[in-house]
Amino acid sequence: MPKFKVAAALVVAGVMALSGCKIIKTPTAEEAAEAASGGFNPNRMVAEIWDAKVLPYLDRKAGPFAEVAALAESDPQAAGAKYGHKEKQGSAPWTFAARLSGTIVKAETKSRSAYVEVDANGDGEADARVQIGPAIRGTAIRDSLDFVNFNEFKNQIEWAQFGKAFNTHVNGLVLEKLSRDGLVGKKLDAVGAYPLPAKGQLPLFVPAQLTVGE
Image 1: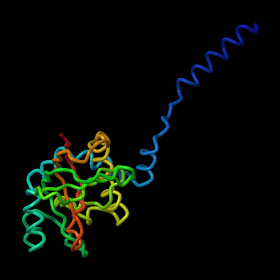
Image 2: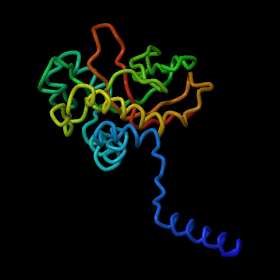
Image 3: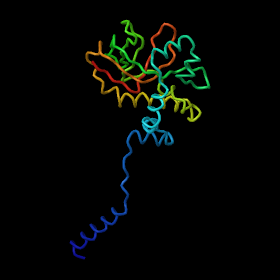
């Protein structure tokens, strides 16, 4: 057989072989982690319920911060029944949904756990500490919701990852866009949640919605 016919035959064979191959996409790190965990993807779970369930729930449940804080101090059970939620199992504290409006009197923006302190009653003193990330402590958003619970998850690790996913979501959606310059003296409006603080401590507020203006 002439050489050019042999070469042509090899090319045709190669094309036919390739046409029978399936190109497999390399999974992303998130996809690989989801596959390794049996399909558990807390970030996707939070994104799917955020607009449809989380924000409407907080909007409906949240009370004015001054009212929530005053009732929580005098009668945590009553405040919890009206504005809060806590898991029936374990000894978790009440977590309250609230609307916070006031003036920023202090801003700590140099650490990853950045925050501002807000005067909500006009006396010049801080009434709440609002976390502005990127690192957010606690799981207040998750813990304020009455439509999710620990029993729906395989173990404590998944439950913790689900709680962290709320913080990741709000940081990417809201907090990353917040300017860190000249915050003191500006007005803040937020809807979010905070756990019952220890006596003498400022409430540690996690915003689900937040605006800062002049």
